[in-house]
Length: 212
Image 1: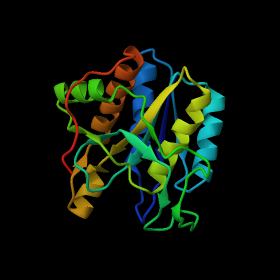
Image 2: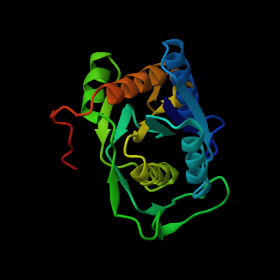
Image 3: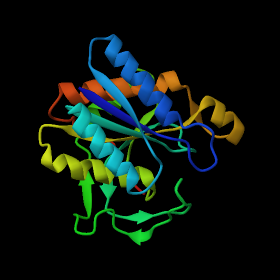
Image 4: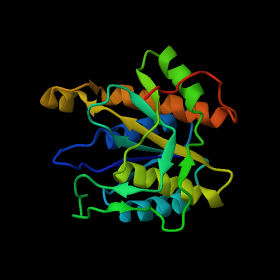
């Protein structure tokens, strides 16, 4: 079972492409005979991890791919690391705005994704989809959920997981005059990431770092 999550709209947007992409990817996987489910998370600190924990219990997935919107980015961002740090530049959808506080008080400083990031990057590039390994998932609710996911998976050693940021949708991109991507392309990319991560226990040693 593959669990995909996306977020509700936030920051004044009327839609969130992460949710549309997660829904469509789950449908594509199910149509191909690969069991998958999509769950929407609230863009709220704390509550989002609670909803995610409930989804893990309900679906007992082998793989979890959490997805969020990164407006302004031009590619699918395969997030490498989640940090134990909340620093909200804007309030979440419940009005919370934590500043310089840990996601989990006694948790480790960071967790790394257990998705096949490099294999996914190679396969996404071969499919003509813009993608990159990202070294930061920010300090807002996306990183909060990413850290929460990897923390929850410490008790589920057989389950792999990680986080992917998607650009604005094509419609949002036009409104913001920013890079964008079709929801269908995002979904196709998520399917590639899910399959690569389920089929391979080891990643490829290809360069995908950053100089700054």
